[in-house]
Image 1 (cartoon, rainbow, N blue to C red):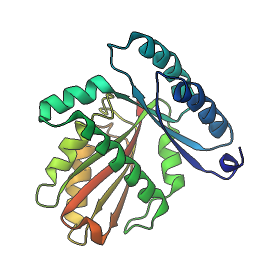
Image 2 (tube, helix red, strand yellow):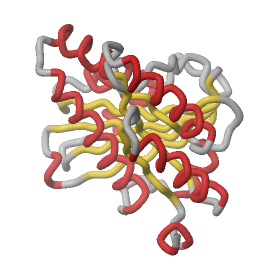
Image 3 (cartoon, rainbow, N blue to C red):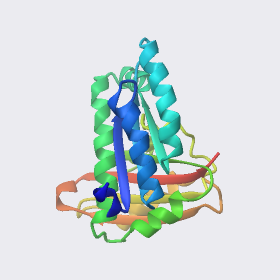
Image 4 (tube, rainbow, N blue to C red):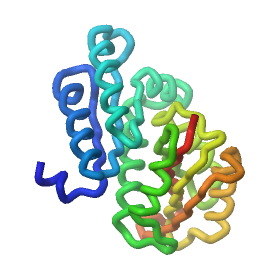
Length: 222
């Protein structure tokens, strides 16, 4: 796979329970990981009312999880529950995935006010234990909502309490201040291990005026 030969990070977005994603995603992740890539996977799991697809998905997720540095399980049941709680269309849950992917790409690929790079991510993601990816969005007027949304993200069912490593990036417009970064980061890492390695980044963009987005890689979880 020539593309993998040149890659340093790979993101796999797949649906499990059928043939293509269940069969190919784990193999691609395995090859990428063996070649030294950071492998971040997001896998959609079917509804419980589909027992055959659930059986296939459960078998496939174990292989994908083993071959990924981070493997996020996106349960359709959890998305539907979140939608009922928020009284929204459950399909809008895909917006969380879009925000997460866009945030991760800009974190690594674009220069920030406080810059993060691939080595920062690797130092966090390779800590022993489980790891997860988190995203939260909000506004400069209500920055506390960013942390609230991040902690209630339907993309992760892992409790971040006691985490040993955290790479966190805050994105906003020109109206984002250092106070926003300090307040949000401090609240987000408050439940983590006192000796947690926290690496902070910040980036501003004109198209983010009035908005804030937190993207985090959290590791060293039980």
